[in-house]
Amino acid sequence: MTDTRIPLACVIGHPVAHSRSPLLHGHWLRKFGLPGHYIPMDVAPGDLREVIRTLPRMGFVGANVTIPHKEAVMELADLVSDRAILIGAANTLIFRSDGRIHADNTDGYGFIENLRQGAPDWDPSSAPAIVLGAGGAARAVVVSLLDAGVPEIIITNRTRNRADKLHEDFGNRLRVVEWVQAGNRIEDAGLVVNTTSLGMTGKPELRVPLDGLHRGQVVTDLVYAPLRTRLLSVAEQAGCTTVDGLGMLLHQAVPGFERWFGIRPEVDEDARRAALA
Image 1 (spheres, rainbow, N blue to C red):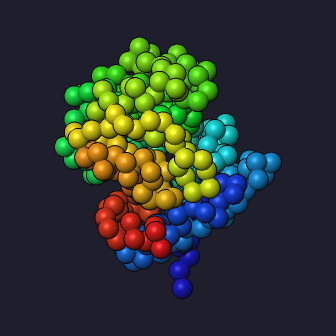
Image 2: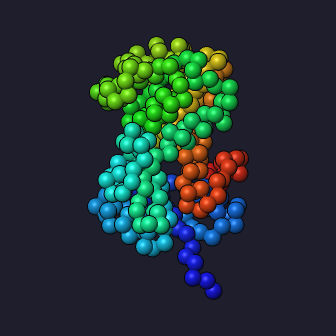
Image 3: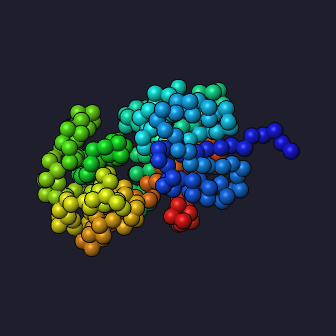
């Protein structure tokens, strides 16, 4: 018998049953033979504050946070990282031994690491990037691309004012174009990123014209259900290097797992298979 508490972690969302995170973290826990558990927790917005404050007393060492709680948890944390503040959302919580709650955002890290793994020859400084969408995921992508040295980011969104807000927040390395002009801008981009839900199972298709895609470009889609979206299929046929969205989910999980359980896992084929199980 031992008095050592088994570390617990979770993913908090509403709904959350669709999350692949428990499969992934469970795989890593088993791989390293670690004591610990990772579970999904469906938490309604009205219960979020009470749940977040209770989890550390129950033996939880941290949590991932997904829709619709990514902004709200920042108000509940004692410490918020600079990048979470810049992005305006947090997806990772660390429950510290001193009782304080630290909020961070690893989405941008996951996005860039996925690109580096899936398109190792991509040179961020070589050409502009075009980002389709201007929601929360787009903010994380923009921050990571600016940090990586992309010279210009073209932002386009079905609702123009959200794209304008990104330009206002991040400056003149961003250029906003109308959604109906997106197809005309794709040809000049070195990187094409879909951050919208268009193309996801149960959602409308991405209707942006894709005839400007060509060999030498990198195309990535944050959608991972289906794993091979129409955007990626068309891009592959055009000779582009394609990177699916599952890798971003896997890579963004790495820093949290390391902080909670003390070992830094690798994103490999076994991890991909576990997340898709």
